[in-house]
Picture (spheres, rainbow, N blue to C red):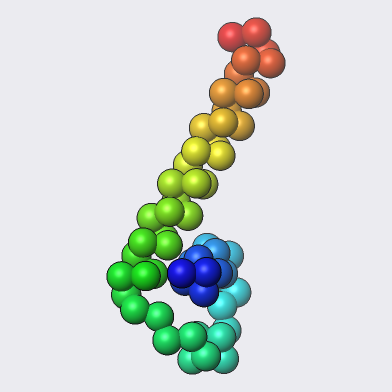
Amino acid sequence: MIAAIKAVLAAFFGVRGRDNAEKHKLKPGQIIAAGLICALVLVLLVLLLVRTLVSSQGG
């Protein structure tokens, strides 16, 4: 599962090379699950950042 998360994070940044892709044989289900987890974490971090910035402005 760690390899799937690394692959998804690399895909978010667009830096995953062919060598890394061929080295790890990942199942589509693993990629989908890791993608959903990473997307959820990203959304929660953005939400937390926005709430922090808005509350520091007195709103």
